[in-house]
Image (cartoon, rainbow, N blue to C red):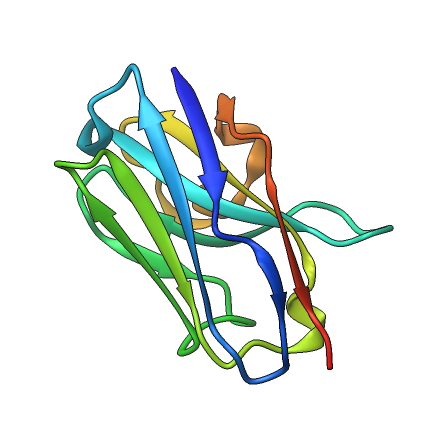
Length: 125
């Protein structure tokens, strides 16, 4: 299983980015896919999750601004990020786990077994 993130970059506050997580070696809708981020000096935190059932979940800090989606044909999960803030600056990682996840486990990195290499998002004027 291989996960490759892309789409990061430098954006001004209020701007938008779309991150992609392309998966190979798996059937995407058999897996829960999570997006996590890690800012310098901080722990890696869960941002969003799309369950193997297709249901979507968001951390409170990004709810209403970020949207996660899945394209089973392209085997890719997207994270559309709007209204970006400087505090969204971090390395963003996607991660995969076979089957559904429930409750707070969706945002617990210890429940994900496969990780991408990360993509840097910087929000600054």
